[in-house]
Image (cartoon, rainbow, N blue to C red; front, side, top):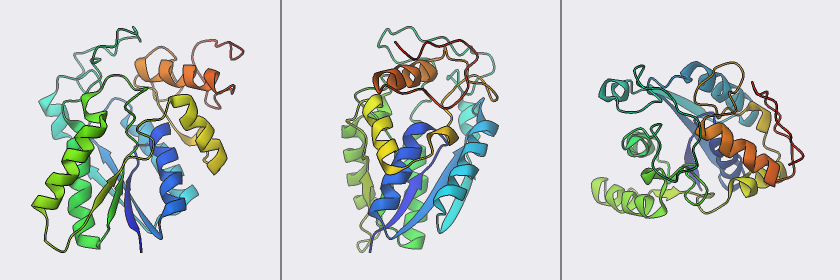
Length: 227
């Protein structure tokens, strides 16, 4: 029996990862973390809608706002501006230092309690924004650490099903799985209408264009979906 915890942020990658987990597992549990991000309220609304759509057995919402106290990320620091996409390939200011490690370790603690043997996370390495904690080697190392740091009978796999897919491929896969793309939220700046200019928005817009589709969410700028 595959019993899985899925890290669901409310974003598009986590939505499609949730759809994959739903197909592959017997029981699913959703973990959502609030860490003081500027779009925390909007992400929570998306998460709640995804829960209603996929109907997990249980959900766990965790507040780790201490990441905001640590700071040094434009996602959580009010004194830092979220910059527009620049295509430099450098780690953007929106990178939250070692955030995904916090997410995974909390999931592991919950997994030990409920007896889950899988943790799904929608990390993307090849077509992301150069975030170091989205690399496959990081999750391979985390899985080894989990094995060493848990009870002998605990066996947990960290599943990253879309880590080597392009964003456009992820969108197409989501359509194939019937995932409600309109429920997801990717914008780093706004809570109402996506800005269309931040790193995450630009990656999402370009991915929909490459997939030959129009994004079902609204944007604050005019977008030619034909190009």
